[in-house]
Length: 356
Image (tube, rainbow, N blue to C red):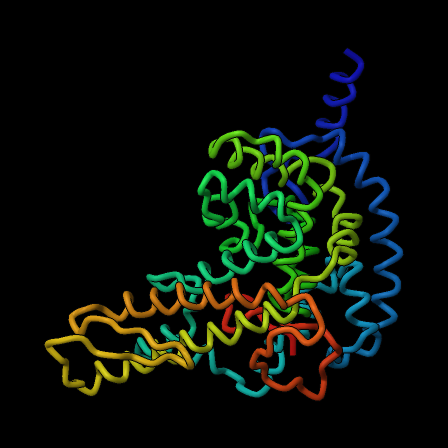
């Protein structure tokens, strides 16, 4: 009775609409949130003072190890817009191309520009999404083999349990304050943060997941792990995510290479079609990087790129055997830029920014 009264009192004190304008879900735990936020407010106040000192003067945002450390501890709401625009490179692009967006809106529709903006996550074949889910599967296989074995024993594809994590970048999956903390790091460090968060969720709840005895049970467990105090307490959650063993950088570079191969294959196929490439009545051979796939001349480009993705997944599986050890698989990787702070960027052309 006392617990119910405390919950109702918290519900009366905490607004139904959060500070970001979103309505709280029906099953929202007001009492737990109030207890968390009373402690988190002190952290926010302390961080806001430090951020104000760091950004004093109103100049541009310069990446540094200090900035990276500050971002990992959270960007105050009043500074988020400026910091996100700065670390993502959006502000620099706007400064270099004033009025460009308005010009695009006023001009004629450009299909090629739309295709350039659309990432591999949102193309008809969704190759980017499939690749990144394969990556997560291989990382789990290396770091949490019991969970991987459970998935394999039931023939369960990762796409059934984590698609929303990647497509929505945890929006409507984790509490909004936690999502924003994830995005703080995402804009600065790139898509490797998505893998860190995913691994942290699975690692923290490994015992719960292993209790599952069927496919529906596994799916339900993966829904359960995105709720509760562990994800609500965003500050400790993000600290945990950065303390976890980092994803194998060699594997992430391998993914970037394979996705680059896929893009070249798609570009080549599109070029051949646009030039009226002579189709063979028999079978034709297409090359993608070092991967050779023989496909029917009557087959579509999507079949070809799908085959490339499958081959890439096989290559990743082979690389994982040595990815965590010195002297492991040698993978192509573009050189680091002069402003690199030592962060390993995520996979190539993704729907999220890569580290510079």
